Image 1 (cartoon, rainbow, N blue to C red):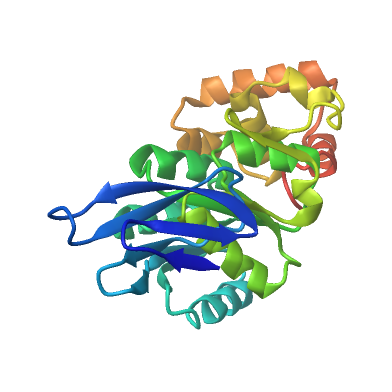
Image 2 (image 1 turned 60 degrees about the vertical axis):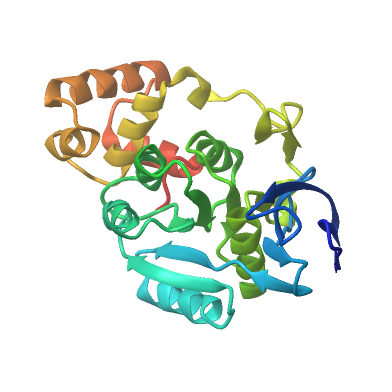
Length: 275
């Protein structure tokens, strides 16, 4: 429920909201509200015009990136039914997602975790470096701790399983577009949300072999598990082939794995990559 007053708004919608008021014109004419959630979950963003006593929805622009055309079209059809949501671009790879994001500057980017070529997590970092105001939601069929942790490291504001109800995707886009976060219930139960951000509960996260790997080494594992050559990996990571070879050697030593097949199995088992 949203109650409008002449000087501002009081909002209550599942979470306690703290309004931050900013004047948009001469005093007394009108006031806008930028809603800031204390508990940043399931939040819709609205603009208040008390002078005329009505609420105007803010349109949220969305980019959908998934290598499965059916999923892309299904998500697109569901989002365009909402008057406050606008799909501005579609992408079939993470590399295309980066290009489309730079071209269209979406408010929210929906990224499939497992796409060919450039890794979704690397694409996410590139998008945020170019568009720091953009928000990211990852879609995946794998919800292991390592995948969630990688998503959070990449700057995710939301994380949904591909079996999520379409209405949850709509709610997630609205919440994240408003500056909040959205995680499906089973994932939310494994997270801590506080002033420092969102992270996995330490009490639930058991130390594993991936903790020994650097971010770059994880990237190399992900690409090797996709069957990419070291030259292709070097191109995606913008480093030399020698650097990739050094990372690969380090990974094999740390994990005591000595061939690509075993490394791919390890990556799938620990959620670094999806089959």
